[in-house]
Image 1: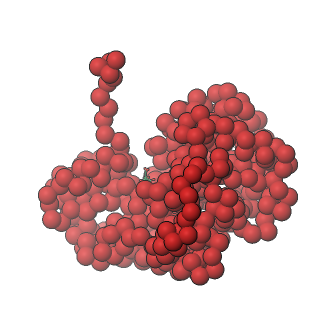
Image 2: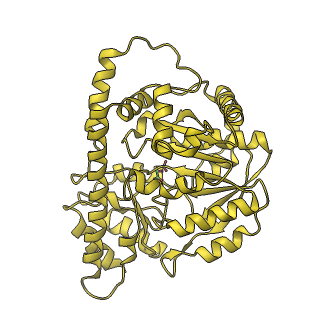
Image 3: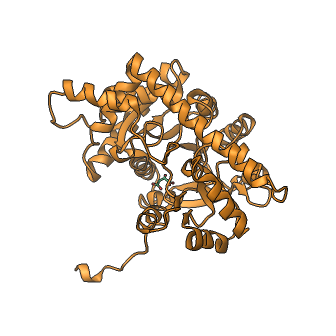
Length: 395
Ligand code: LMR
């Protein structure tokens, strides 16, 4: 049987890490996979996570199965993190959360529930989007259409083109939006654009599906959430896939949640049952460790304070690196990279050619996704000069 399987090329993002690790060049830089790195180039375990792990180790009584929806404290914490305490959908009991294995698991369970409601339903994805959105959604038999989002020539969102393409959406179609820190381009919607999209969702009876993988890494936990919270207060239904990989640094622990906002609490409970049933058919129930950590942090005053401070330091470092990068690239007065300053999160599109990306890799051991997406967090005080010199050399 297995001889009938075809070989596959490496994953376009995860494959870069493997190639980087094999590279012997002492100056090599990994600007590929989207993980936060500190100024020494390490992806650290956050202090609050360490402390939560110690407390859990001391208090954990059993390794029996979790309930199907996961860790209750985590689900409640994520609902409040995503929507903000006292949000109307929480007060009305219209929002539920089901823990999932990471943001990917959440996206997939959300897609399975969408397909159960309307087989083969259409999901509108931004062009460009995170490449893994395609297999995750298509794997649940959903149909994908795209709307233009980032205009490479203007280095900005082409909002008029986005709205115009979405005129073709029909009632019940799902509109997938990146909550903040757009992956791959770093260009985020502003408040007016969120409101215009809310109006469109209402007018055309669409269902927004928000991918929240980077909350807290743009401008702040609440600031980053303002757009989708504003939308949630006006629309009858919404799905949110929330990930703890980046903002808690829990990548390998696979902690995330799929959230459903429904017209009323009974419909929200039905969506929750469907999500738990979909998970039961794939992996039964989520793993405990990462969600137990995040749940404890979100619900303890001291751990939460420590976590928020460290998250702020992470975001400040990335934003500071954006600034330094632009200063260096523009020093000769020849190029305009100012757009990098206006973008948020780990990623920006450099907008260079695929030959230049290849030369950076072959001649300088600098690894970036072929779409010209760079992980700004891969830059450190030690490697930024080598990076800018190399980039200017290939331009
Ligand atoms: C990325 O986009 O690099 C991250 O979200 C990691 C991944 O799973 O692709």
